[in-house]
Every structure is written in structure tokens, then in C-alpha cells.
View 1 (cartoon, rainbow over the protein chains, first blue to last red):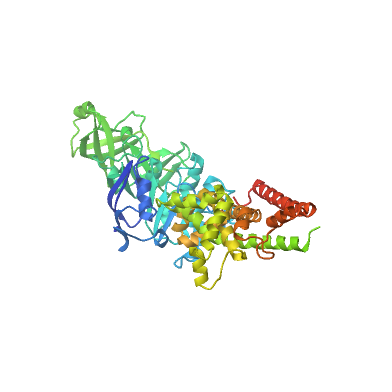
View 2 (tube, rainbow over the protein chains, first blue to last red):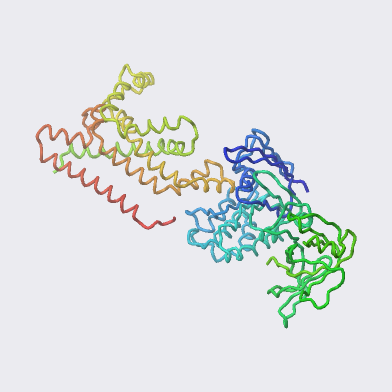
Length: 356
Length: 225
């Protein structure tokens, strides 16, 4: 799995990037953090757009940078999507798409066709690249990066410059990309919903340093992780739509260990989705609850307990089958219920946020 | 009407301005690009030298060039040693002087155009496998196209309007260095006011049309951007 080894030290007057990373050679890795945490700078170092004096970068055994040596950007087999689409204004959509293709002997026309199809660009091909909406422009930019047949795809907050509606327009394409992509994709983002929806692996950056990293679903289920997607702690589960209840406008999602009801969405049975369950929306009981408005009850076993940021509350991790959920409860409740590791409990899940 | 000498002077002027514009496109483009891209500490030095002809009296520039091109000057020694002969009072001497004199008129519009492109398109091109040279011709030149046109027109017009440097370097050799501006001067000296009028009017109309064309071009709703 360790296909990307990166070590960069870069010192600017107001900012220092100091990272030493090993990243998986497959799937989507989110570079996550607040503005100014160094996500974009790290991505630019990987692309060779930034040349740190001290650095080391090896990709699939190929040396891209070592000290003074740095493979120029145009010789690295990458695809790069910038935050603003940055299409060439003097070229049409098709000419933009063909720009890299013409210059890369590895790329084949079939790659371009696949990219055009994946991002639904056929109706736009003859348009001038300046007369496109923000969402269309970003789709062209993504296809343009794919058409060069990269070995590594880098995206720098490709949705950050778009409004909510445009973002929803692009996300499904990125999910399709996620399913079909055989190369690693490094995705810079500060948006928790994008990360929860897309990432397999997460690298959390803070002030130019790596705060934590690991497989997203696993790391979010660890009580000692500093990673939060959004303001509160929570876990992300991989689930699948298994049933629609049209009478009550609900649908049932199955995950590895149980299933939950949530509000109905227009998704076919069998569709894979991710759900985000926050610690504050999970409560514990020692017996199954009757007479509760909360319909989602799961049975599990407490497998870890940890302090939380406030002295009055604590975090309890409960394994449910092969999955784990985290609940936050007051220390007093824990004391009264006698919560301890190994104890069977019932979880009540008040809210399940589906990432779709 | 225009005499044969007048027409000869006009043709010579057009020839001079065309050669100078072409040479300056070749010389000025890399200079302007370097000035935009370089981070060398002596960049400001080069920028000042390039801009110098804007403020320098033409006679000063012409005087130093005359010294340099003269038989004792470094340039003169070089041209004589290489068998090119002497440069002062020849067409090519005039070309050399005009290239220096009109340099800022080529470099500054190009500098502005290159600067306006910014870093991003160059980075995009690099991530799409374009080498720096390839990027220059396939991205920078098409995007800076209006800048090239402005620079070429200004250079051409400025060379046409040159007088002081020509007089210092070229003197007044018919068919060699007697350009339109010098010809007008000659007419006036000889009190041939009506002939001076005609030629002056031609120059006036030319300059006006050039500036008008440039204005219309800039006002046009942008085509590709």
C-alpha cells in the first residue's frame, strides 16, 4: 500500500510546512484541515509546482524529488485540478481537453472519450471555455486532468469555489470517479461533507504539520483521534440501501453489523451510501427501550471508554457487529448505568446523516 | 505632390520601421518575458536600461551610439574586424540605433500583457505535460496576442517618427538614411514649404490612423477572452 513516500520541509516567512508521509497508492486520500494548514502547499509540492529546498518524494518506486533534484512538473505523470477551473480561455472545451492528450505519448484517445463520458461533456465540446457555468467549467477541468492518463490525480478543493447547488452537481461525478478510478487521488478539502462522502484515507493537517492520518472509517472510530469532521465527533459507516417504505417515506440502510431507518431519498435498492453518525445523537441504555420516539435501536458491546473535552461528559465506543459507533454521555449517566468495557448495551440513534 | 525623393524617403521609412519591428519582436519578447518571470536582483537594472530611451534625449543616445560605432568605438572595431564595414551613415547603422531607441515601445506592452496572464495558466500547462517552451508558444503567445499587436504597432509608429537619432547616426544619405522625418526637415531648410506640407500631412494622417486603429482594436468586445 505504501506507494507514495513524501517528505517536505519548506519555510516561508509566515508559514512552515514540515511533513513526512506515507500515503496509500490507491483510493481517495483527503488532505484535510483548516485554511492555512498547508494542504494546498503540500499538494503543490507533490506536483512539483512548489520546490522545497529539502524534500524527498518517491512515487511507485520512481524518484520525483530528492534534495536538489526535482523532476519538473511537466514530466510527472500527474493530473491536477485547481480550485478555480483555470481553463485556457483561448481554446474551446474540446481543445482544452485535448491539450494534455497531444503532449503525452501514454495517453490514448480512449482515455479522452472515457473522461468526456464520465463527466457528461458531449453537449459542451464545441463551446468556448469562457461561456460555461462554474460547475461546467470544473467538470471540464476534471476531465482534462483525467484525459492525460495520469498515474496520480491531485485535486485542490475543486468544489470550494462553487455554490451549494453546483457542488451537488459535481459530487456524483466524483463518486463515480471514486468507483472507477484505479489510481490514487489526493483530494484537498476543508469541507467535512466532501471528506465523509469521498475519502478512503485521511491526512489531517494543522499549521503545516500532520496531526493524524489513517483509513477514514477506522480512524474516526478511535476515541483518541483528534480528527473531527465538522464541529462534533462522529463515525462514518459504509452502508447500502436495502428497503424503501413508501408509506412512511423512510428507507432502511444496512451496514456491517446492523441496519437503520432514515428519511427516504431517491436512491435505488442496492446503492452504496455513507452515513455520518454523530456522538451526540447516540444514547445508551442497558435494556431495549419501549415507548421511545427513537426507532433506531442497535445492540452492541462497549469496547472502549475515554474522557471528552468537557469534564462532565465522556465518550463510549460500542462495537455493533464489525462496525463501531461512538456515544457521548454525561459521567453521571455512565455511573448510574454502570457502563464498563465488555458490557452489552442498547444504542439509540437519534439521527443518521446520509452523505448523499 | 510628392516628389520621387519624397516617395523614396517614405519607402525607406517603411522599410526601416518594418525591419526594426521584426527584429524587436524577436529581441523584445524574451526580454519582456524575462523581466516578468525573473527573480534576479539585477532585474531592476535591466528594466531601467530598457526604459532609458523613453527619457533620454535622442541626441544623447545618438551621440553615444555614434562614438560606439565609430572607427575607434568598440562596435566599430568589431564590425570592421568581422568585415561588415562601418555602420554610421548606413541603413543598418540606422536599424541598430532604432532597435535600441524603440526597445521600450516593444517591451512595455509585452511586459503588461505577460504579467496579466499570471502564474496559473503556466502551472496548468505544466500539469498537462507542456514544457516551458511549449507553454510559451501554445499558451502565452495566444493569450498575449493583443499585447503583441499593440507592441508591434507602437514600435512601428515610433520608428517612423524618429528624427534625432537618425540625424546623429544616419545623417542624410538619399536612399540610405534619408527617412521621411529627415526629408521634411530638408524641405523646411530649403524653404520648400509646400513640399514639407504634403509630406508632413502624410505623416500626420499615418500617425492618426495608427492610434485610431489601436483604439478601435482595444475597444472591440473581446473575442476569445
